[in-house]
Image 1 (cartoon, rainbow, N blue to C red):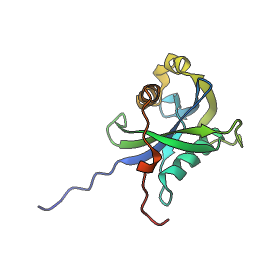
Image 2 (cartoon, helix red, strand yellow):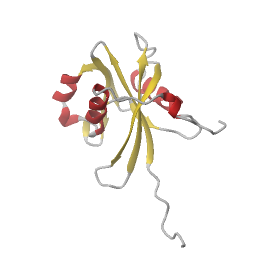
Image 3 (cartoon, one colour):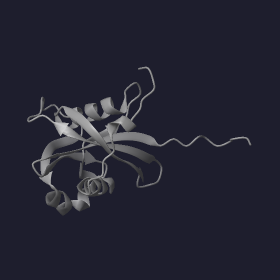
Image 4 (cartoon, one colour):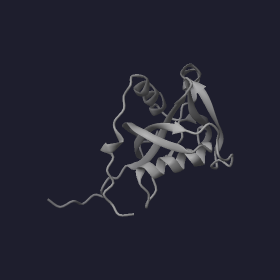
Length: 155
């Protein structure tokens, strides 16, 4: 059988769910739909491991150094117009007491610690439904051991 159409490829992204003292690290950001809130997240770039990608994204978007401790889950969603499918790998982890810098990525307004209730009160400005799904999965105790993440490439 001959394959004539282009091979479909989802856009791989990484995100971090970080809880400290009952609050979650979130970022408030400018998007094409206005200001939204999200977990620190972004695209997994060529030449980096997933773990390095999520550490980089947390640092770029919040100023905090991130240490992944578990994989929360793998989430699939479409862009509003269905033109792009995102494959999001969300990691659980920890950050230091204070950010190591305040020079945040373009578009990021601020990083802030919010309770679950505060995040849900702003449900209408979640970046996408994955924000709430990740929080619910985390609160249910879902986690996968990082040993399940195996990168066999030589980088």
